[in-house]
Amino acid sequence: MRQTRGAAARPSSPIAVLSYHQTSPTPRRGTPVRSLVLPPWRFGLQLRTLRLLGWQGLSMRDLEPYLLGEKTGKVFGITLDDGYVNNFEHALPLLRELGFTATAYIVSGQIGGTNVWDQPVGAPAVPLMDADHLRAWLAAGMEIGAHTRNHVNLCRCDDSTARDEIAGCKNDLERLLGTEVRSFAYPYGEHRADHAEMVRQAGYTSGTAIVSSRARAGDDLMRLPRISVHLYDRLPSFVARVTTNYEDWRMRRWDAQPTSRGYYVMGGGAGQGAAAH
Image 1 (spheres, helix red, strand yellow):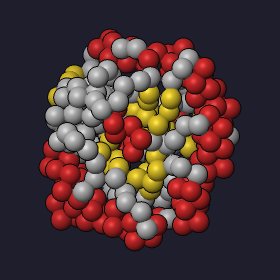
Image 2: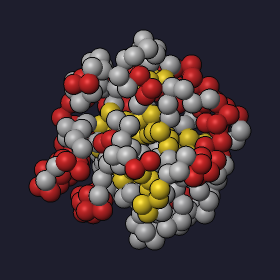
Image 3: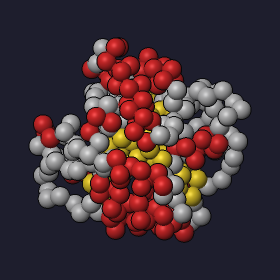
Image 4: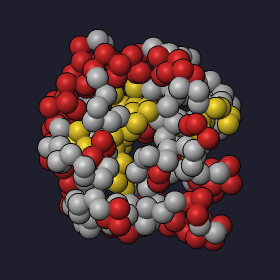
């Protein structure tokens, strides 16, 4: 990359980066984190609609030239947190059909395991991709990113643990897969400025949170906003969130308070991305 990564990044127009979790039949009402499970038909409807409107979905790796202002176009980012097997089964065939790419953020300590971080609140155990799934994901042209070793909330860790979770995940995945891991996502979206610096020092080229905004000129590539997609999102508002300034208007309407450009704390709550996993 010719430009310095970080606050000097200059996308020519705002870029939406979408955060998905599971693509699977919807669990029964009352199931914890149910809103983060999209039935495959709804996931397909969203992406096919954007494709019909002339938009291209890209992994964080493929989005880099656009975030740096080296390319322009109608593009948006597709990320899938945690590495669920149901994304391999349902999301991957659709992505290949549409010619899109996506980043799967992997918890390196749970490869082939389950979403143990959600189970204390009553969420069902859901299988995560194993090494063979991850290799097939890469072979299909997709990207593997890092999501810490143990899906920890970095804001509740001491510095030594946070650094190990961030850098160790990259090392684990690169050793297993034999390929560079460029992209990082903060579990729960929560992080501090010193965590972003740890991500930078570990050698990642981007770090993403859960923030309801599109990436703009001046955003630090280690603290990029993402728009979380939920089960109850209606198609017109979903499309508007990607293609217009609707999301910024919506956040102002709900009295979100900016803590820095594009980073929000909702209603004085627990912090950015508190509802995200």
